[in-house]
Image (cartoon, rainbow, N blue to C red):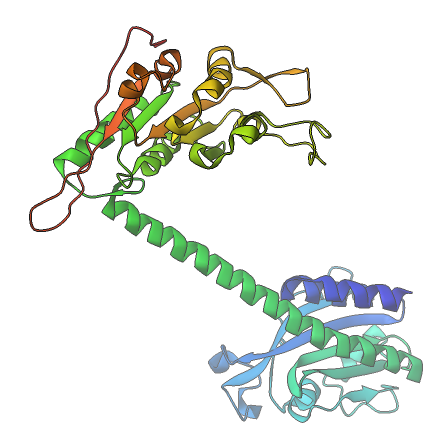
Length: 403
């Protein structure tokens, strides 16, 4: 079970450092193990000061000690987890560790007293009671990635070798996976940094939010948005189709105190008359034929945020009273429910109609019209040579204003 548990944990690691620590620490928990070490094949970095420089045949690559766990039985204060000792580097092909990496073949010393040709410091092995050594290449798709080495207090038996071979094979696969995750993490950070850089670049071009330009007219629009956005006032945006009403609405929300909450958009012109109440206020399960589940409604979704009513002038006159109640009382009921629900949503409405004319023609409720504290008017002008767009912002404070 211990072996199975280790293999499962190895597959769950998302970084090479955590993988190496897991392997050496878990293997060192076995009573017969004195020292566990992992070396990885990397670029040569300390060639001029390497103790094995004279034995090195290819300075561009060598083995780097990346993990170590063990304890001396002679000197309890000696730290065998250090990675900067005299064996922190092994040239490829040099000594037993370098030979394993270069040849791709394991080196097994079942009994050190009987076969010590691969042991560099025989005196150390004798003092520490080292009786066995096993070094396995960590290979993935035919490439040697590193070496896993174990020094044991007992002579190494075949069952132990079999388990070490399994662990080494899995460690190579786990290493490849961990490197892939690290690469993904690196690319993710790179993308985030690039995204941040591009946003900063865009912010230098963009005067405010999604507005790009330097004209005096646009400056006036932005000044008015700066004035209105931080307030809790409801806003009515009027202008022809294509003048950027939704753009203004998004910017009002972005610069408001509700910017961290949702901006819910409703195209009033696309809602069938019979579904108006359900769309805006939601419905209970079974409220009508086809109501198989409950529906929250746009007002519920926009609670504590902003509700953008696009083409508000298209709401039928007989249904405008329902909308007015929510604006006046901050209350509504779902279709099929008697429970009164409270809502705190800022309303930004937009229309391509002149709603004041609609009021005079009895096609839009006057009281609903004046529930908008601020009126933003957008108009389009056409030049003689080519079509250009000018946005004008006019602010009206009226006697019905709550501000």
